Amino acid sequence: MDLFLAGASIFHGETKLIPSGYLRVKNGKIAEIGSQEHVKPEAGEQQIILPKDGLILPGMIDVHVHGANGSDFMDGTVQSFTQIASTLPKEGVTSFLATTMTQKKEELDHVLYQLGKWICSNHLGQAHCLGIHLEGPFINQDRSGAQPKAFVRSPDIYLFMEWQQTASEQIRLVTLAPEEKGAIQLIKYLTQTGVVASIGHSDATFQQCQQAIAAGVTHITHLFNGMRGLHHREPGVVGAAFLHDDVMVEVIADGVHVHPEILRIALKQLTSSRLILITDAMRAKCLQAGIYDLGGQKVYVSDDEARLHDGTLAGSTCKMNEVAQRMSHLGCSVQEIVRMTSINPAKQLNLFKLKGSIEIGKDADLVVVDQDWKVKLTICQGVVTYADL
View 1 (cartoon, rainbow, N blue to C red):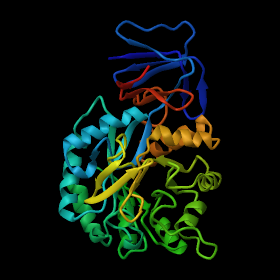
View 2 (view 1 turned 180 degrees about the vertical axis):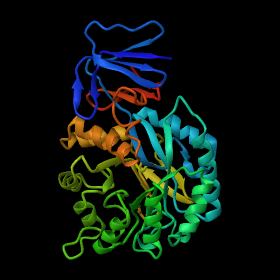
View 3 (view 1 turned 135 degrees about the vertical axis):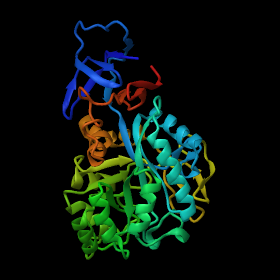
View 4 (view 1 turned 180 degrees about the horizontal axis):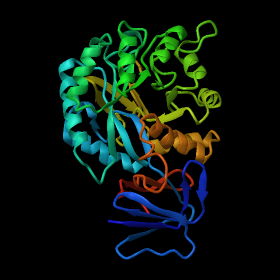
C-alpha cells in the first residue's frame, strides 16, 4: 500500500532537515518529500500522522548482528532468520548483514547454504537482509574472544570460494586476521570480487595492517575489541584504524565493550565520517537475564552484559536505537548519528544508490524516533513493520 507520512521533521539527504515535512511512498520507494503546508494524501494512500517532535530518519543498517529474541543466524533455520529479521525493526533497523561465527566447516556449510537461499527469496514486512558477514574462521586464535578456538582456520582462498558459491554469492563482508598465513592473498581476492575485507580478531602489528590495507582492506571489525590495542611503541590495529582515512571502522557503543571516554577519543580521531555503529548482538537481545547459547558455548547474560564463564565478552544485547542514544549523550548531532547508522554502512556496502538516506527514488526504509531515540515507527521497503504511535 502507498503511504503518506506527515507531521514530523524529515532528515533529507545527507545534511538537510525539513521541519513539519511530508513524505510519500509508492511501490516501496520514496516518491515525494517536502514541507507539509497544505499538502494532503492522495486517493489510495494510507495516511500516517506523526508526532510533531518526531524525526523521520533513514532506516538504520546493522552490518554486524548475530541474533535477537532467542534466535541466532548460526541456528541455520528459516524460522530463526525470520525471527531476527522481524525483531530488528523494533529498534529502527531496516537492513542488516546476517553475521556468522567461527565453527566447524560442516556447520558453516549448512548455515551459509540456508542463509544464501533465504536471502535470495523476497521477504517483505521485515528488515531486509543485505547479505552475510562472515566473521571468522580466518582469525587469530589469541584474539578469538568468544569465537571457538578449536575451529579457527588459516585464511584459504579456495575454501572461501567454496563458501561463497554455497551461500549463493551472498557473502558481502569478511572479518579476518591479516597476519595469518594466506591472509594477504585472500584480501586481494575479496577486493577483486567486491567483498569488503575487514581486520578483526587480529594481533596484527601496525606494519602488518598497512600491508593489509595496501592489499585492499577497507574495514575494521568492532574497534578495540578482539585486536592488538594502541601502544606508544606499537600502534597495532587501533593505530592503523586511526591513521588510515580510507578505512571504515565499526564500534559497539553499548557502554560495555568500550568505555565512554575511549569512545569519545575514537569519535574525535575518526569523526562520524568513518565510524559505523553496530550492535554485535547475540540471541539474548530482547530477552531477560539468563544462560544462552553462542556457538555451543554457555553465555551468561545479566546487567546488559553477555559473557562466557571466564568473563570474556560474548557479543552484546544492545539495540541500535540505544547505541544511537548513547552517541547523542556524547554530544553527537542527528546528522552525525545518521551518518554512523545509515549513510556510512550503505556506502561501505556499495548500496547508497538504494539505501542509507531519504531521497526520491530510494527504497522506503524509514524510522521515526522521538527526542529520546525511542522508535515510534519503522518502514522496511515501503511496508510498515513496527508502530508505536
